[in-house]
Every structure is written in C-alpha cells, then in structure tokens.
Amino acid sequence: MEKYIEEAAEHFKKLYAEQLERVARMEQAGEALNFKELKPVIIGMCPGDGIGPVIFKEAEKTLKYLLKAEIEEGKVEIRNIDGLTLENRLACGQTIPDEVLAQLKECHAILKGPTTTPQADSGVKNLESANVSLRRELDLFANVRPVNVPDKQIDWTFFRENTEGEYALGSKGVEMPGKLAFDFKVITDAGTRRIAKAAFEFARNNHKNHVAIVTKANIMKKTDGKFLSICKEVAADYPEITVTDWYVDIMSANLINPDMQSKFQVFVLPNLYGDIITDEAAQLQGGVGTAGSANTGSRYAMFEAIHGSAPRMIAEGLGDYANPCSILKATEMLLRHIDMADKADKLAMAMAACEKEGKVAVTGTREGNTAAEYGDYLLEKLNEM
Ligand code: IPM
Ligand code: MG
Image (cartoon, rainbow, N blue to C red; front, top):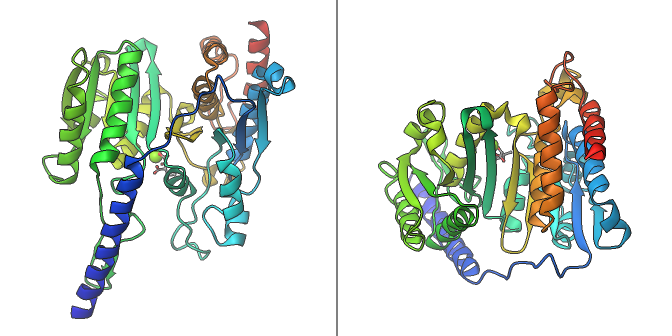
C-alpha cells in the first residue's frame, strides 16, 4: 500500500512541474499570423480514418474549387499530409509520427478528417487520441463551435477551452488495482485567460452582447472556481457585454428549453463540459454530422468535423452515406480564418441553399444521398452563384 502512495506522490510531483512549465510557455505565446502578408498560405490536408476520407474528398473538391485562382497564382498551396492514418500511426507506434508533426508545423492551417483512437481493450497499441495530442502539440487552445438553427432563433458560438481540464492529464492518472484510481484535472490562470479573451473578443467583434460562462464551480471548487473567477476578471474589460454564469447541468437543460434557447449567444467553458455540451447543441442543428469545429492557437489552426471516424458506419457498409456537411462547415471556418471571408460566405450560402431546397439530403442511411452526391450538387450551386 505504502509503495503505491509513495509512487503516486512522486508521479504527482512530476506532473506538477510539467504543468508549471506549460504555464511558463503559455505566458510567452507567439505572435498571430498575418494572412494578408503570407505567400503562399499553406493548407495541410489530412483525410483521417473511417468515414474521414469519404467526407474529406468533398471538402477538398470544394476548397480547390473556391481557391482555384489563388492556387494557380501561387497565393495558396494545398499540401497533402498522408501519414496521419491509423495504419501509419500504429506502424510508427506514435500518436502523431514525428515526421507528420514536422510537416504539420510547416502549414499555416490544417483541414483534418476524423481520426480513430484505438480502444484500450482492442488488442492494438493503446495510442492517445490524435485530436488531443494535436491540440496539445500545436497549442490549439480555442475550440470554436458554431451552431445555428434559424427557425428556433438559435445562433450560438461555443468557445471550449481545448488543452486543459480533464484532457491535459487524461492518460496520466494513477491506480491501485482492485482498490481505486485517480485522474487529474488542471486549470490554469493563463489557459483560462486566453480562452476567455478569445470569447469576449469574438463577442465584441461580432456584435454579440451576451457571454455565458459554464462550469460546475459549486463542486469543482479549485479548478472550475478558478475558471469562473478568471472569466469574470476578463469580462471586466468588456463592459458592453452582459455576462451570466451557469452550472453545466442546468445549461444542458437550457439548451433544449424553447424559452431559453434564443437568449444565448456566446459560451465559454472548460474542455470536458465543452465536449459534451457541443454535441448536444449540434444535435439541435441536425446532428453531429452537421457541425464544424475550429481549433485555433496563437500560431496554428486546425479545422475539423466535431464527430469521430464512425467505425460502425464503415462496418455496416454505410461509409459512402456519411454526411460531409460537418467538414464543409469546417472548411468555411478555415476560409474565414485565412482572411477569405467572401469565399467563406459563398460556401455558407451555397450550403444553406442546398438545405433549403432539400433536393439532396444525406441522412447517414441508404435512403439518403451519398456524400459525393451532396458534394457534386454543392459545386453546382457554387457555380450558379
Ligand atoms: C471532439 C471529440 C474529441 C474530444 C475526441 C475524438 C478525442 O469528441 O472533438 O469533441 O473528446 O475532444
Ligand atoms: Mg466531442
């Protein structure tokens, strides 16, 4: 028994020091890129696993169509990065093989399909989630997830903290077999300040006047308590914005309460609550297959679908019927990020037109259209605009 306690104490000491080093790195964050001056803007393309390559193909087609002139003029380079597949990750025995990480770091923005994380009991090497690892390696601290349902006056943007909370040390817990297990949750001042600033800046720049802070500070007193108090501190610099604070349980009820839905605009929340709540929100919009996600940091940015690689769909032979709308929304966010708002708007309008007409509908089943049929129709719409 004593041995376990001592080992755990040693382990915790190391984690503490590591996290303090991370804080020090955060406190001297790099400068943001100026996309107007960059030439070429390098966009890294990672199709991913499972349904990833199926939906990714449609995003790639669309991106190349919208950026045709810029690619020809050498203003934009689309760069394929092949090694971020489960096969290669397992072959290298690394979540993100060194070579792939080096390639990703040469890009200014990354479009990524969902990647599979092997389950702990699947018999293959127990790799960490590629998402979690990429977010950490590239310090992509802001996970921005918009959800829109015009009929219900829902126009929400979630700012999920993307590098800390339960995720920072999720694979570094301790256990005494047959007795107990601990995991660790870590929230830092610097980490909270930067996500809160991102949320309030977004609100200010987009004429939003309400930011909701979501925690469970009544229970997780140290970590969520810190998150809440730092967010409130940051809020003081934005006096024109109304700030409300909520516990995550009641917020999950509010999101499906028709009397409350239209009252919310921008949300800021720690990592795990953000993970859960954004799937719920996406479901209101038509499912996780319809929601895009931006992971941004001070230097890098990665855009992806909010869902996973759907191995079940592949096993059932339904891969071709996967909905590409999520990754297309991510493509729209990427275009906005690289300062091409006109192209992003065009894509958003074409997607809205497809939805309104309802001629092509991807349902994830054989009754619906395939991803490719949707992608082709979308190109037709873009052509008409
Ligand atoms: C997400 C996903 C990831 C997460 C998984 C794939 C690790 O659910 O992006 O929301 O938990 O963050
Ligand atoms: Mg999730």
